[in-house]
Structures are given as structure tokens and as C-alpha cells.
Image 1 (tube, rainbow, N blue to C red):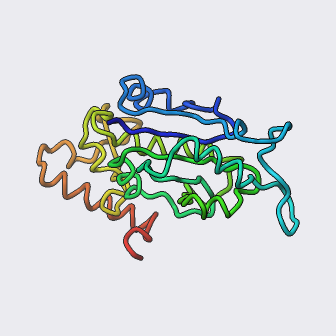
Image 2: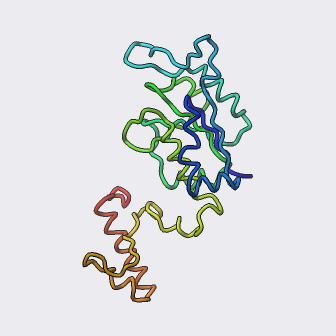
Image 3: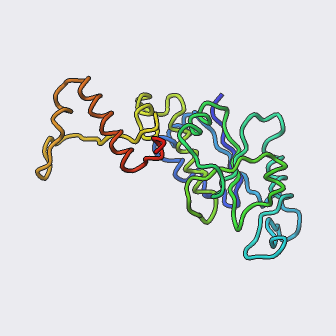
Length: 227
């Protein structure tokens, strides 16, 4: 069974978006994964098709209504659906490569794209939504974040990448950033490829790459090393 993604959004026309191009788009065309974009507004019950209301207790902005989001969720996946239910949210747990691999190994995901000031907490609790963040910043909505998450997952599905080993040596695998990469020409603007990379000594090359990865990680992301 292919990976199934169901995205609940106020802007279904934003999908597949970037996911319809390159590796993800080719995989979508092949049927390696499927995508359904659900219009949350279709589950509003009043004549204005309202999906939001003023925050209880006062404050700026609007909040997405629990009843409308829950109705959209219930119509899109039942209790027997094994897929995790995710809410793209800046207050969620940071998305990691380990979580991406877990998702890629599963049956798919149901993703709610938040808007406005957020989603009523009662639907988050009542429908078991797992809040996921793609970084310490705020976007206009969860749609771009959902595409980021899905792109990261889809490229790890079997057969999507031409060289499956590519995913094993990337940044965040083994808690390290990637080492520098080089290709032809051998010299460019007076800069040459490190001699070890053209030596043919694969043991030395592996050692160099490991040392460079550790050096970069210490400089840029010491948190990955527990520092």
C-alpha cells in the first residue's frame, strides 16, 4: 500500500504545489504516494461558512473552531485509520530526521493546516492531534509547513530516490551535518578539490568526510553532539 497523505486546509488549491514537481511529483504520478486536499470550509454549518471565531477571554485575531475542524477530520479518517494525525504549529515538537523516517515507514499522515491565531485546543485534545513545528518562526498558515514535512518524508519512500544510499549520508543522519561536496572542474577560480578526494583511497576519503562532518557540526550545530 502506498503512503497516503490527507491534508485539511482552507486553501486546497495550494496542493500539490511543490509536491507536484521533481522527485515528489514523479513519485505521485507513479502512485508511490497519494494526496488528498480537503477543504475545511466545506464542513462549516452556517450560511457564511464560518470556520473561525473570536478567542475566548479576548485578544487579537481569530481561532479556528473545534466543531468545524473536527467534522472535517471525522469525514476524512475514522477511528480505525492507522495514520498519525498531525497539526502544523509553531508551538509543536520540532520536526527531526528521525521523525521523518518514522513517518516514511508508516501508512501515511493526516495533516491539519492551522490558520489565524491557531486551532481550538479542544479539537487538538479530542482528536489526538500531534503538533509539529518546522522551525522557530511563524508562517501565515500550515500549508507550506505541511509541504515541507511531506517533501522530507516522500523522498525516503522506497524507489523515490535514484540512489537509496543518498539518504544515509545526509545531514542529521547519525547526528552529524554533511561534509563539504565537490565535483568537476578540478580547479575553479584558483580553488582546488581537496587532494584526498581524488586519491582513490576510499578509507582515507571516508575518514576525511567523517572528520569534516564532525568539524562542521561542532561549529554550526553543537546541540546535535550534545554540546
